Image 1 (cartoon, helix red, strand yellow):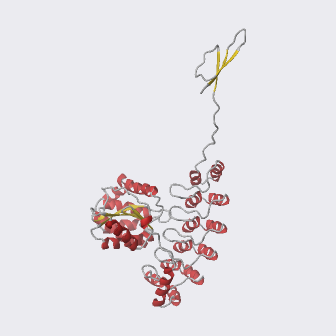
Image 2 (spheres, helix red, strand yellow):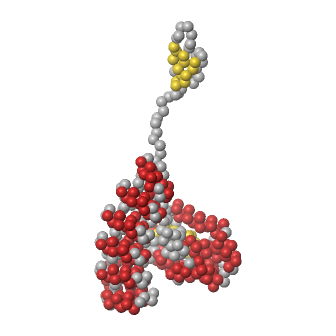
Image 3 (tube, one colour):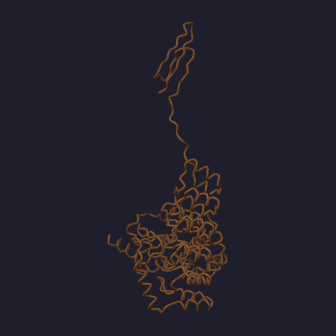
Length: 436
């Protein structure tokens, strides 16, 4: 409603007030009075955008405008996790001092401490430990900060974590401990540190390997092998100890309780197995991720068990902060697939089998492609093609939609299986789908 104050000018100087009319023609002077408006506070600034700039003043302004210091983004990441991933040291310290929740996780279950350890950010690790961060909190691959320190060879971080009571006996989804990862990397100093802190050399992983066997398979120095051999119990007692330990661990959540998803199917992309199979496995993967390597082996086992009944569709979720060659591998796989499905699947198998060779960078990928008989001229064009780029982009967008911020992740007939889980989880989902 518009209120109109009408003033009639004349010898009598009379004053008239008319209310409730949109238009008033009372005299020579018409003054509209707008109704009182309700004051609204401005919307808080986008704190994640401010964090990504690395500008501490912008972050401070966002917080003062009412932005939530722990607000999750589309990936479930808090501003603190984003700042750690962006390497914004000043912003990381500011957010921690402004009350950022050091226990908050992203969609993949990573805590700020785990992210900092994976990125070898020793300064942030120290700050987070001062805030009593949980040193044994693990992500969906059961990677703890100590395991991450062993994977990245960060001895200083490992020492700090052990000093904060990180448990050296914790295993990841592969059944590997920090000691096993250190042995796999042939990291003498890390192995000695972990053994001195009580790490058990007798534990074996899902693949039955021990730290000693891993060191031998990787061609470690004789001194390292001798050290591990002296600390490794007999095979029989080691297996019994490992079985007893696993019996006390919580079982992974069944995939049957996960929400159902419907990934998009691009008919121009290659399929492994029976294209008309009733069971579809979508594999969101990173060619440089060791957990994806084991995930690929699991899928091989699943497809062998259900031969002719299952098809595999690969989607890409490269994590460049952790795996710098992952994006190149994804592009090569898709580019090769445009020439030959068989050659692309051979590339897939070989990269996962010889994953450590990715240290050779792009020349190694070119070498593999040439050995597969790929037309290198066409490959170069396809690597730069819009089609190849669009496929990766579509996969990344879909991963964000599904809140997959870690690998491997699988969707099996709509059911989600996250992390490098054992084949039995796939068997349960597939058997259930076939009974319906």
